[in-house]
Length: 518
Image 1 (cartoon, helix red, strand yellow):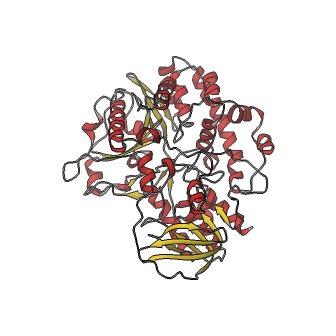
Image 2 (image 1 turned 45 degrees about the horizontal axis):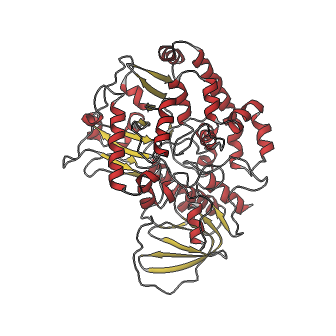
Image 3 (image 1 turned 90 degrees about the vertical axis):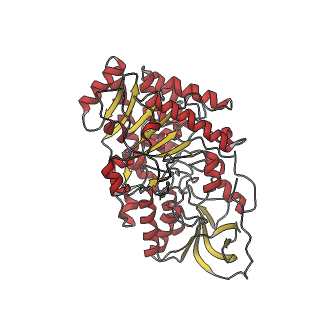
């Protein structure tokens, strides 16, 4: 549901002309603007909100609490080093030593990137042997090889399906591109916990059965393991807003004009863009228009209907500030280690399947699967000095299998129910309730906020609250094209809904700029 549009007096339309008009000031639009302005193009960026960055922003979410949270998107994997270098971005992406920790009864599975022997011992405790550890190593060796080969192609014109198959090799192609990833995981791994840890990367922001022949989960997994050739998920120092801030600075420094509070209300295939701000309605013309909006929104701005099936997001995001880290049931693991990586909560293979089935029936899962991590353990700069001294930490929770359909009839009531069920799920794997660790703001309110897909639809203009704008696509297509083309010669798609879009990557923005410049 789009926000209500304010009524303004209409001013006479100007005849301003630009080489490029970018509709939407999210991070991809800023990447495109920076590249094009550096190439000498006259560029205008129009952003509806009062700030740029889209979902890649930082905010002080709780009044009187000096903590800058990555409110929506929260980790960086897909952003290519080439874009950072090309645009001279002063961005630090900090590696997390611990990949993940998954509580299992009174112990847990710790994947320690700095101690292979400790990881092996943890696998032995949880699985009772070495078979799944060896399977884990083989599987991620395969995905690492795929990442190294696929990542460089993401900033080039599309390759064909056949060329991509030849590039990654026969076994990898079968396992990641042809067979449902759920079947592959079930075949390769025996332990339910290990299967679940692998499958979560196939379900982040994606409501899918990993055994479905449509292979949507495969596409999701692929984008989660190929980031910049390594697949590592890194912490942006200063929060996600530091990434968008650096991109906006690069675009402005190159000469791009950025206007916030300017909502695009119509796009004409001939290049005219109509927008509304506090002074009224205006129109500008671009030789090219780059749409940094979901495809469904672009279709509406062009005066048409939807573009394919209606998007549906499927996640619950909970932001928290803790007075201290919660205690674990596992005495062998320091909470600081467990929570600095991805902390998996009730995400075993069977638990994921049960939650998906419940959500598909239209009910909030009884034991919602989720994962958390504490940004401030890797980057304490997002906390004010008093909070740091007191031992406070931020905690970000991402809940799976929470499709928008569950929140349509009663958004507030369903959100409350989903939060209650999710916190109960968290508490089942801790040694104490997470509520006991929540920091209170100066008015005594717990520092916790939740965002459902319906909230994202209303606040960020994402149809269905889909964080990837629409279902992810394969990273191949018609050779020679960039995956940003639309049915109109003067209009290119530069947002997450472009082919090879999704995540905080800047790839669609780069590719739209390259398509225009070439």
